[in-house]
Image (cartoon, rainbow, N blue to C red; front, side, top):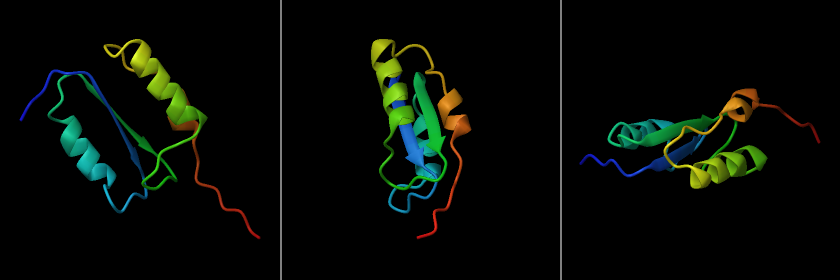
Length: 80
């Protein structure tokens, strides 16, 4: 099924429940959809970057949100 309804699809790189591949499959059927994969995140995509994208999308669902913050996210390890 195809849809022209604006949609924001966000996936975490390490989401085993709904992996990014599934998010991309959904996105392919959304003519006015935007897909973002968040590195180093799992099923729950949160944080200031995700909130910024959501806010931008809600303000103007016809314009792709600025994804600079997504590109800046890096995987990091913290030792106890």
